[in-house]
Image (cartoon, rainbow, N blue to C red; front, side):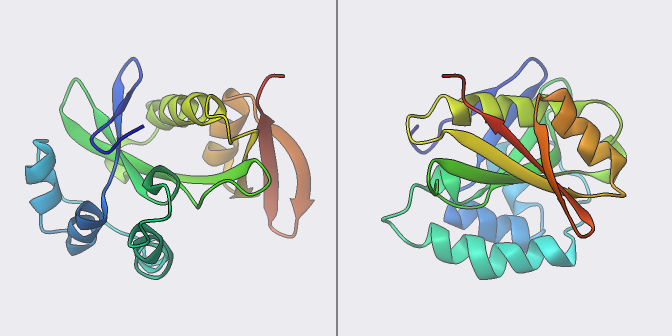
Length: 173
């Protein structure tokens, strides 16, 4: 997949952000929305996401040796409203054939199945890549919505680790 490529599902478009676009996302001044040509709306960035983007994702994106699709934030655009409704990410290039994902739906758009669809789209794409054999995700035990998203996408619970449930889905053989 080259820069400028997007994934589409029935209701959504998943857009992997470039280094400059992640910086605009962090500025949260609507410049990213204007560049993408989507409706503008207030957007909150959690402290944890801000820290991850600044300390992990931007340095990875700055490394030309890395495949940016595995090292960036993917924004989720709802086709019918042409607006961003959430984000997901792959936390780095495959290690031993496995990638890890994370995700979040903006509060105003929760409970509509967008993230189930977005995770499914990203996982289907990822498992179709030669270097990806499995996808890993973890969620807090108290986060029922996140667990539902993973189970709806055929992830299997592999272990409990403190306050977390850990899940994996493997590519078909």
